[in-house]
Each structure stands twice: as structure tokens, then as C-alpha cells.
Length: 455
Image (cartoon, rainbow, N blue to C red):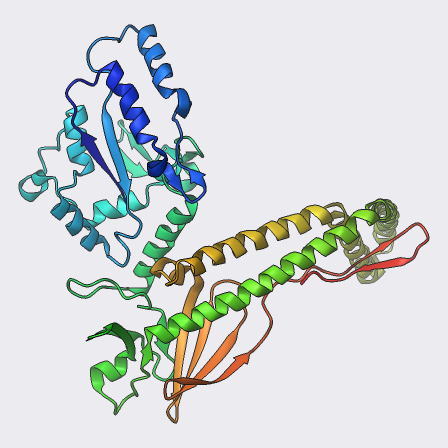
């Protein structure tokens, strides 16, 4: 979550402005991986000082303070596993200024007289944190017409998203869209699954994801503190509340769940990479036959014209022969189906290479996402809730079976454990990818060329 801190300086002169800009653009401060995080808003970052001085000279504002220095910070890992109230409590302990207090210092904007008591102390609360986390301006999007006021009828309402005006990339983004989407998913998942943290504790990563297949209730987590570190276990809520007479414990360690999800990601990544290479081969095979596809498209267009003429003739016959209307209806439906199939084939032939490239780019993006997740070492709560839908746990004769339901077209599997050790792994299918349909393109010599499936 982004916070603003005003840096106090005495003069704010023109010479100091250049020093501040050089300071904030230091390489060690603005490099993230191979990306340089330096950009300008309504100016070029490298010439921001010169542009600002020229602008001030143009409007005769060369006297007095020349600039204000603010630092905007966003710690991704600092708030990991915390709830909204916990984040607000941390900000209050750190003495961070609220948006209202910042507006008071800069714009002299005071709180309304209706807010008294504790509200006048400018403290953070969970609702304020939630609004900031869902503000799209941090990813560069300006949204106008969020609300509407009618002074005649004295009414006020918040507008629907369809009525609002969105301006993408209006601001220089300070957050990547991936991180913002993770935050959005995380908030929605916590609300839907009613995930809560214990007193003075972080939210458990698998909270709300595990469900007992025997009794239907969710699992509760338990932290076990040992000399070598902390271990987290999950138990059935029925066992936790009412005892073993009503349901067994179904104990699952968090470490085991991490291993299962990581192995599945590795398998899926290998499958994606194989599909990516197969797509390259399919594109190479398609290019030499593009001219043959043009001839096939022309034939299909002629066929559509012929079918439409037959359709008009059948309609005229149907008007004069009403006794056999049902027979004509079947003939019309058959022609319409053939026309739709021909048009679909034309569209596929025209957009074949573009479709393959788009599919390949999607695979590349998914592979890069999985690399980033595996590179972190441990699965974060945000990544888990984006990947995992539900994990059903069933126990029979001391054996646990974990049925993991993922939100993406990953490979389905079923792992069976006995006494803490995996005894069996069943791969149900290779993947839920929608394969590209096999196409036949007729060349000039009318020889059929079969393009094999990419996945």
C-alpha cells in the first residue's frame, strides 16, 4: 500500500532541485531486476529539471520556493498475511499521515464539523486501507464521473461502472498491474471465504481453501512452535469443535501442501513449454500454405453465394407451397447451417497465424508467471488464492486423499498419503487446454494437407 511522506527542506531553491532529482534517480534506488524505474509525468525524466525551470520562467514564478519533495513508499512484503485492521494499526504505530491529514497540510482542507472525537485525530482504519488498495490511480488509470449529484432534487448517488469514464495510462503507474490484480483477488477471496486472522497473528495462507470431504466443514489452522522453527497444521473444524466422535482430524501440514502445489506448477510449466515449441512448428508449417488457404477461402465464398441463391429459391417455393412448409423449413435450416460452417472456416483460415501467435503469447505469459512464482521459493498467499480454488481432504482407514481444484487449465491429479508419506499419485488427464482444431487446406492440386494439433 502506498504512503506519502513530506521531506522537510528549508529553501527549496533552483539549485537544490537539481540535487534532489539526481538523488532520487540513483541507479541503486531505481533498478528492479533488469528494469529501470524512472519515468516522468507530463515531462521527460532525464530533462525534468530543465523543463520545470523553463516552465517557471514562462509564467514568471522564479521567486520563492521552487519545489516540494515527497516520498511515496510501497512495501509488498511488509503487509503480507495481514488484514486491513492490522495494516491500519501498523500505520498508526509508525505515525504515517492519513490522506486527510496530508490534505490538511497542503490544501488546508479540514474535516467537516460532523466528525468529532476520535475522528478528529486523523487515524487509519480498515475501511480507509481498503479504499486505497482498490484505487486504480496507482496503476495509472483515471476514472471520472464516479458520483452524481442533483442539486434540484437534492440527491446523491454513486454511478455504475458502465456510466464512468476511464482513461488508461493517464498517470505514470507506481505499481505493476500484476501486483494490483493480486491485491484485488486477495481482498475478494478473503471476503468470500470469510478468512480471519487470530489475535496479533498473520492470516494463514491456506485459510478458507481446505474443506473436509467427509463432513463438509472447513479446516482451521494451528501454529506449533518448536525449537527448530514454526510448523503449521490444519485440522477439520468438526474435529476441532466437537471431537473425534463426529469426525477425524484429517491433519495436513502446510509444508506438504506447498510441496504438492510446487510439483504441480513444475509439471504444468514443462507442459506449457512443450506446447510453446509445438506452436512454433505449427506456425512454420502454416506459412508455406498461406497461398493455398487463399484459394480455399475463395472456394468457400463461392459456395456461400451458391447456398444463398438456393436459400432464396426455397423461400419463394415455400410461399407458394404452404402445405409442405415443414419440409421447406428443414431445407432452409440445412442451408443456413452449411453457410455458418463455411463462414467459420473462412474466419479460421484468415486468422490462423494471428490465432496461433496469440495462443503462443498467452503460453509465454503463463510460463513467465510460473517462473516468478517458483523463483520466490515459498508460495505467497496472493499466488495461492489466484491458483487454488479448493482442496478437498478425505480420510479412509488412516489414508488421506487430497483432491486439489485449481482455477487455471492445469493438470488434474490426485495424491494419496499414508502416515505422512505419499503412497500413490494419479494423473487424471494431461491438461484442460482447448486444442486447436485440425484443419485441411486444399492446395491447387487438391491434395489434402493435414495440420496436426498443437497441443
